[in-house]
Image (cartoon, rainbow, N blue to C red; front, side, top):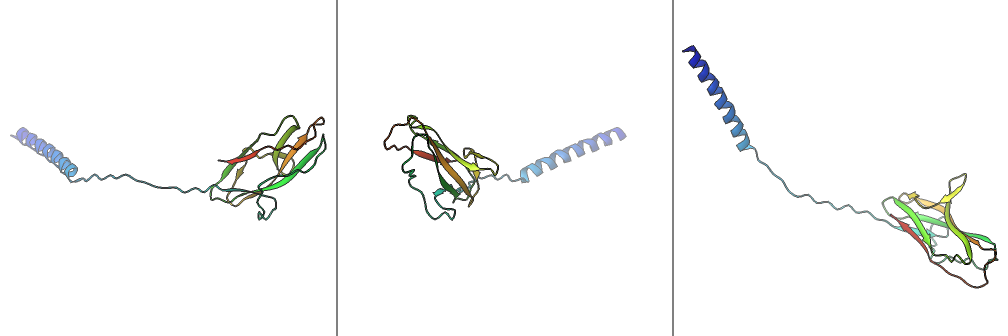
Length: 151
């Protein structure tokens, strides 16, 4: 008799546990919904001829240069957006008149390419675009494209 009562008690506890779990599962409400968010990132970059960034540059004019000359123009880059931008530049300068061209900024102890530089929002970076005219460059007027990109 004692063994039967114990067995009945075990079965009753088992039934109560399973019933309680089923009841908890039945009372649990699952809710899900799609979530949407729009992050607005403004990437704006200006090139200026002055440190106050009031005179935007549309063209760079080196005027007359002699064969073998080194010339540069100071340019100020300003991030007018609300997100960091990483700079890169390219040019299609004619290799028949230039030994090279470079767009650099000062690190304090040396000048280095702006490629890879991260410009913070509202930051202004003083740079110089420099050209190295070949000693045997022909006379004439030349033009090329300089492109600044930001990512």
